[in-house]
Length: 167
Image (cartoon, rainbow, N blue to C red; front, side, top):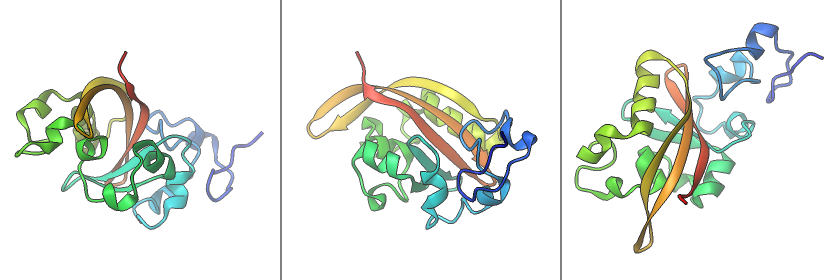
C-alpha cells in the first residue's frame, strides 16, 4: 500500500517515507514542507501527531506551533509566537535578567544544545531528555522533558515527546 502525504494526499515515493533525517515530518511531502515557513499555514503543523514548535534561527524564537502544543502549554499562539523555547516551557531561567538561552544555567541545557546543533549541522535529534525547573504560578516544579528536532529549510521543528512532572 502506497503512503500518501498527510496534508495534500499526494503519493509519496519510497525515499520520502524512509528519511533518516526526518523523524518528525516523515509522511509529509517535500512540497508541503516548503510551505511550512508560512506561519499562517497551520494545516501542515497540525498534521503532525504530536505537540510541535516551529522555530526560526535568528533570533532563535518560536514562529508557530500546532494545536497540540498550544493545548499542552495551555497558551494561545500570541503567548508562544516570538518567544524563546524556555519561555514557552516556562523554564525558570527564562525569567532571569539574561533570559532564555543566555543565562549561565542555559549553557548545559540539552534542549538548547540539540536545537542549536540542528540549525548548525542539519542533524536531527531524537528523544533528547532533560529535567527543567518550570514556573507554575508561585511554585517551581521539576518537569521531565523530552524533545526531538528536525531542520526543515531554514527552520527547525521541535517535537515535544514528553512534558510531565518528574517523579
